[in-house]
Image (tube, rainbow over all chains, first blue to last red):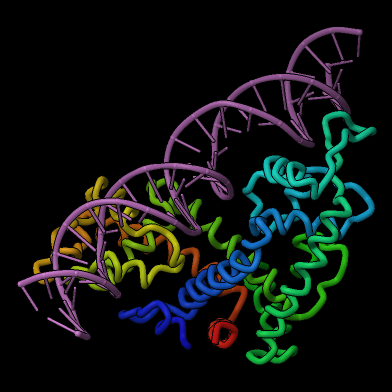
Length: 151
Length: 151
DNA sequence: CTGTATTAAATGTAGGAACATTAAATACAA
DNA sequence: TTGTATTTAATGTTCCTACATTTAATACAG
């Protein structure tokens, strides 16, 4: 369905660029909604999930809070408090960084890895639902256009 | 710059679909950040701006709060309280709907229209910055791929 | 009509996001 | 070294979001 129909837009967009911006944000919100629903039974927010995946990418190396912030999709959110929540759930460990006492090393626990593994299955199911809509080549083309939009 | 570089991803994405989802959300957050900065001097949040634009699309007809919710990019946000804020700034008017006393008619004021007109200029500048990055055809192709992703 | 279901908007709430500030450790120039 | 600037994480604050509930009006079956 076209974005105009989805948001019941009465007046046409002023340019294809305006249209793509609205479409992008609408589609992103739509996906975030799907993801949030998927995570709800596991008591994880989307941001907490992102942090866990970043930590898994580094495992078994630790990573600093500032590195987490740098890699997060939403740069503005507060990695320190997100790590708090994950520590409380015993999904990550926080230890003082030996080489710089200002910094804090964060590492994902076995419990965290196990939870992510469980979520991978659901994630793959969600991803598969896209396979019927776009070919792999089209998905790549879409990624490439997004990269160029941000250039 | 590729999304992998932007988020300093160490392990490759598990599929082009996974990649496009992350890319989409990253790009959307990036644009939302730009827009939020643009609106800040005008003391408008992105959501309030969206509501105002929806109301302009209907002007001079009024529109119900439920219709606003339907057309918003983020379906989950609370149109009722957003309208509160806009009423407080005298950018919109709220009146009881004559045909259904449960409903509330909302209409944009002259002050609201003037503010939007001012913002259009800035918006066009932002849109122009995309013209150097994608051709109009590519922007259309991007919109179309997004439409199909949501299908 | 009468009672039940549905719809519209507002509101209560817990938690999250955005942004500024603080506190401590480190870097580094004079 | 000494003092200033910078970096790192944590915290304070205000507002917003997501979701559930409430209140009121309307629809509609029986």
